[in-house]
Length: 111
Image (cartoon, rainbow, N blue to C red; front, side, top):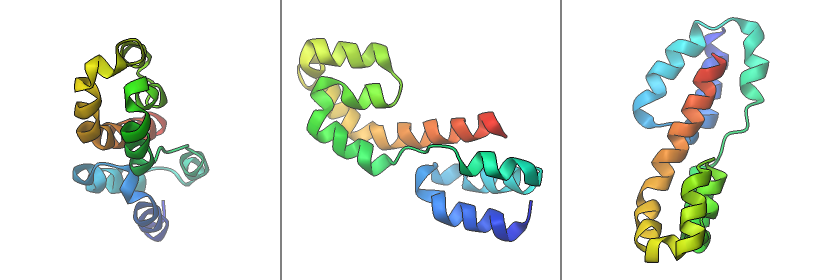
């Protein structure tokens, strides 16, 4: 793929991916065929900031876990009010990293 397209994609979407994996992602995108770029640009990436806000305000209901696709933990948080708040507080610090990892794994599945 064209280096300019890769750089533009990385600059536009770097907040959605873990910082330590940006260079690996850039290498993979550069070696990818041009036809797959439309599929990659159509991926629905979740915003880590939005999920952090959801976790802060609705985390005790498990909404953040449901949005990440972690249904089992979402149900647990819903039924136990975030395990009496302990799991909710832990999620405030880990939800951004987990969201970035989920976005990265989605992209790698297409590449």
